[in-house]
Length: 597
Image (cartoon, rainbow, N blue to C red):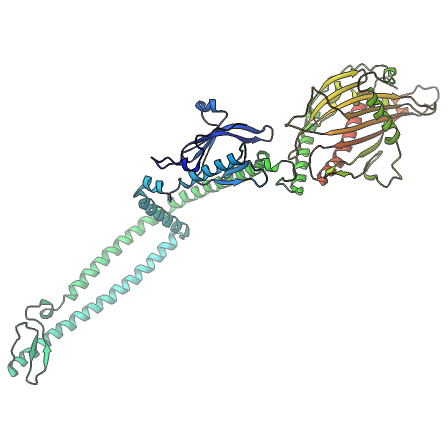
C-alpha cells in the first residue's frame, strides 16, 4: 500500500503565514464492514476535518464521509503497530497506515489540528476576538435561565410565595411609615427647643464668632461646636414626612404593578401548562427514539468493528460470543422454517447409475488417496464405541446417538464426532446417493451459502468448493474437498453390502484460499448398511421391510480460533439437526418410488 502526503515534518505542519496546520492527504486502509473488511481509501486532513474518498481521482465527486476533530479521541491500537482508531461520540473510524512511521505522522497531524480547533488556541483567539466574552456571557445567562426553569416549582406555588412577600412588604411599609412620622415629629420638636435655647444663651452670654464660624468660647474657656449659620441641614430639618410619602407612593405603584402581573400570569397559566405538557411529551418521544437508536447502534457496532471479529484478541468475551452465535443460528433456523413452509420443491429426475460403477476403484490422480480414505473409514469408523472410554455420549434421541471425543491442538478444537442412527423405509444406496449428489445438495443443506463443482474426476468422484453462511462473530468459512461414493461388497454372503460417501479436504489451483474466508479442513464419512426383514407369506419386499443403519463420522478443523465451549456447543446443537433434516429429506424423496438396493 502506498501513501502520499502533503507534509512530512513536524516543523512544516503549520503554515507560517496563517498559523494554521497545513493539509495532509494520503492512502490509508479503512475498515468498511465485516463483509469487505479493510479497503484502501484516500484520506484528507484539512481545517480540523478528516475526510475520506474512494480514491484520489474521485475527490471531485465529493467525500464518502468526514469527522470533525474538535472532540475526537485518537487511540493507537494495542497490538497492531500500523492501526489507530478515531472516535467522535458514537462514530468510530478504524484506520491502518502503511507502517508505524506513517501512523505516527497521521496521529501527530490530527492532534495538531485538534489542538488548533478550540477557543483556547492562539489562532482561535485571534479569530474570535472580543466575541469570546459576549459568548461566555450569553452562555452563562442561558445556563442560569435553564437551571432556574428546571429548578422552579409550579406557577401557582410561586404566585403564593409572591402573595406572602406582598403582605410582608405591606406590613414593613406601615411600620416604616409610623417610624418616619414619629421621626418627623421628634425633629420638629427638637428644632423648636434648640431655637429657644439659643435665644436664651445669646441674651445671658455674649460670644464672639470666629472667622470660620465653627467654634465659640464661653466664659469658662471651653469651646463647643455650633452649626454654621448658612447650613440648611442644621438650620432646617430633613423632610422625613415627604420622603415617607414618596416611598409609600413608590411601593404602592410597585405592588399595584405586581398585582397586575399576577393577574395576567394566572390567566396564562392554563395555556402555558398545556404547551408545557405538549413539549414534555415531545421530549419523551425524542428521548425514547434516541435510546432506541443508541441501542441499535451499539448492537450494530459489533458488526462494523474489527475488534469484535473472531480471534484471541477479540473484545467479545466467551459468553457474549456464545450468545451471538446462538442468536445467529436461531435466526437462520427461523428463516429456513419459513422458506420450507413457503417452498414447493420442484421434482428432480435424478438418474441413479447402476451400483456396479460405484464398486470400482477410479483411475484419476486422487484414486490412491480415495482408496486409502475408504479403507480407513471401513476399519476405524465402524468400530463400536460402547466400550471406548474416550468417546462420550453427548446426545441420545430415539435411535440416534451422538458421541464426541475432546481433542485440542494449539488451542483449536478438533473434536471428532460420531453419530449412529436407524432410518426405516430407505436403503443405504439411496441415503448415500442423495448425500453425494450435488444436483440436490441445496434442497437439504441449509448451512451453505453457495457451492460449485471445481472438477469432475470420475462418475463417482468430484471436487467441490463451498462457502458456508457466516455465523457472526465467527469468520466465514469455506471448504474445498473431494467427494467420492463407493459400494463395498460384503465378504460374507449373510452380511449386507456397505455404501460409503467420504469427503476429505484437498488442494486445487482453481480454488485457492482467499482473505474473505477462513479455509476449514474436513474428513467426513457417511456409512450405510441396509437390513431387510422377510415379508409375511408371499408378499414382495416393501419399504416397511427395510431399515438403514447409518454411521456418520466427522473430523473438522475450523482453521481459526474460536472459543472451545462455543464450538462444542454448536456441534452438539447442529449435528443432530443435520441428521434428522437429511434423513427426513431422503424419506420424502423415496416415498412411493421403487426400492434402490
